[in-house]
Image (cartoon, rainbow, N blue to C red; front, side, top):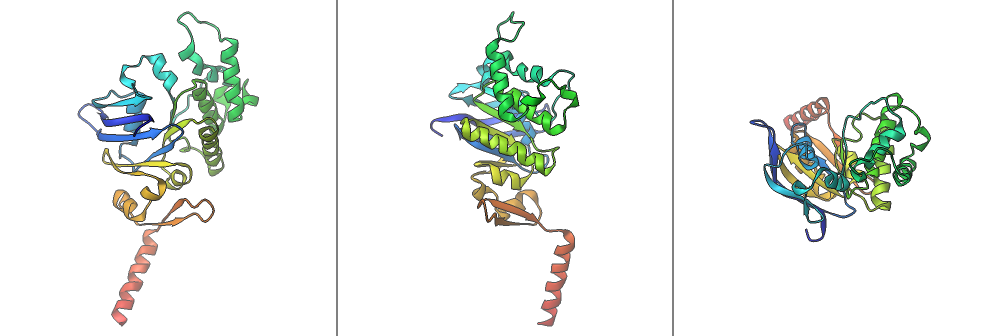
Length: 278
């Protein structure tokens, strides 16, 4: 894609003599809110680790604004991509100190104290994420939802081009799921921040994302807008289960409904009975 902020082309990575993902290619324009979806074991986490640099690139390339990620040093990479992992560290430091760790990529080799600018940037994003009032609390004493917001604030203090999130709603109730995703959506819109996240929940993915990448067995099956990807025929093939898709009457986004085995069996028995009586 011309003028893409993020580009991944013919990418392959994985684990020695174990699972690999391959033939991964897609582009994201600046300001896109994208999601990676797929069944367990499809390669979402492996792709996340490949993009974040945790796993080495075997073939292909990843670039940010035309600059190849593999050629970047640690600090340059951290100024381009900020990562929010699924498991947030429950550390014995204050929220403010935790968030200020996001300024490390901008600090010199013998920089031992946070500058006024570092503190201003950290406070700005703590206020944006709604955790400024907790700045003196200890991270280990925060709730899961509050820790997630602190992790997002720390990532934002890196002032990245791309925000990469791994299952940001996985351990949260629906109130905090919506709170976190509404926040990410606002940041995406108001800051022009490009977002790429792994997410299991198809309804949340369809509601919040502009672009989806659907994976299975280590490869991309379908990619495009939510309406192109969240279709019953595609989902039934990839997830190997019966689903019904409809449109949210308010947001006009696709919604997925599951059907239990009990109901399917009852429907099947009813159809068989009707067939015998015809």
